[in-house]
Amino acid sequence: MLTQLMPRRIPDYPDAFSGWNQISSFGSLISIMATVLFGYIIYDIFANGSPVNTNPWNIPSYFTSTETI
Image (cartoon, rainbow, N blue to C red; front, side, top):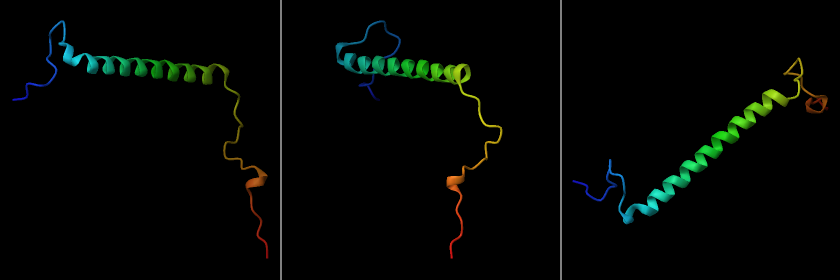
């Protein structure tokens, strides 16, 4: 039986697990900031995005090639 794992359903963890608890808390803050940033980017694209061309498959002339002999 594994007895070295972090115990569950207790209000306070032993000091031996404080480092892992801090790492977990820091990771959750990074996840929250990433989610907020993603939401802002999506909002900004819909609110301030520039109109797109009516033909999305239009290839600019500098990408076309001509056959040379």
